[in-house]
Image (cartoon, rainbow, N blue to C red):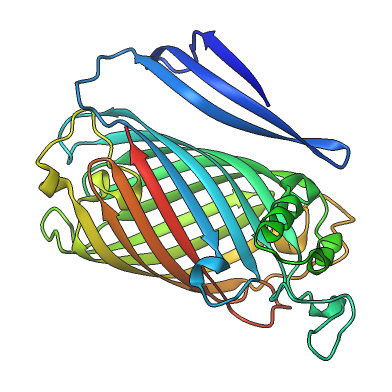
Length: 359
C-alpha cells in the first residue's frame, strides 16, 4: 500500500478557503486490471465563514444491506449493498427549524443474484442446478452520487446525479467471492457469475420530495410523511410513492437522523431534547420503466447471456428502528419487496444496518 498526501488549495466551492487531506491508495490486481481502493485518512478544512465551537456540521454514514442480516439463512436476489456517504452543511442557522442546505456525496455497490446461492451447474438430489434456475439476472452496480438537499422545518426537497457501471466493472463478482471465502462458502457456488450482464456505464438524475402531514414540531411522538421519488437515466428510470409512519420520540425533518439532516453550526437545545428513538413503517409503490441490472445495458446489443423483462409495478414494506443523539445514529430495518423481474420465483427480503457519526 502506498500513501499519498496532498496539501493544496480547493477553490471549487466558495465556502472553503482550503482543504488539507491525506489519502491511502491500495491497488489490488484483478485478472489484468486493478481495483483502486482509496482511504481518506485525514481531512482538515478551513471554512470561509467562522464556525462556532461545538458545531456538528459534517457526517459520515456507513450502510450495509444484506440477506445475512436477517439471520434466517437466505442469500439471494438483492444480496448485498455497501454504501459510504459524506454529508456537509452548506448553510443554515442555529435554530433547528430554520432552512438548511446539505450537500451529500456517496459511493456504493449493489449485488444481485438468483433466488439461492446454492445452485449447481447440473442438478443433484440435494441441490437444484442448471441455467434455468437463474431466475434473476446476475449483476453488480458500482456508482458515485452527489446530492443537493434543502430542508425547511417539516419539508425536504433534493436533487442528485449519479454515475456508475454494471457488469464486470462493478466488481460484484470480486466482492461476493471475497465475502463468501471469508465465511467459508465453497467456490463452486460462484459459477453463476459467468452469466452476469455485460459492462455498461450509465448516468442518472434523481429527485425526491417529502412534507410531513402530521408534524413532529407539533406532535413529537407521531409523524406521517409522504415521500415522492423519481429517477431518470440510462441505468434506471422509475418513480415511487411511499408513506413514512414514525412512532416514538423524533425531531422535525430538518433536524432528524432519519433524513441525514441532524447537522448544525451550533447544536441547539439540551442533549435530551435532541435525542431521537422511534419505530417506523414505510410502505412503497414503485413503477419502473428501465432497470439495467435486469435488462442489461440500454445501448448494448449484446446485453448479457441472461437478461429478463422487468415487472413494472413493485410493492415494498420496510419496518425499522432508529436511535440518534448529538453525534451518533444507529438504525436497523427489514425490507420485504415484490418481484422486480418477470422470471423471479419469489418475493425478496433483506435487512439494512446504518451507522452514522457527526463531527
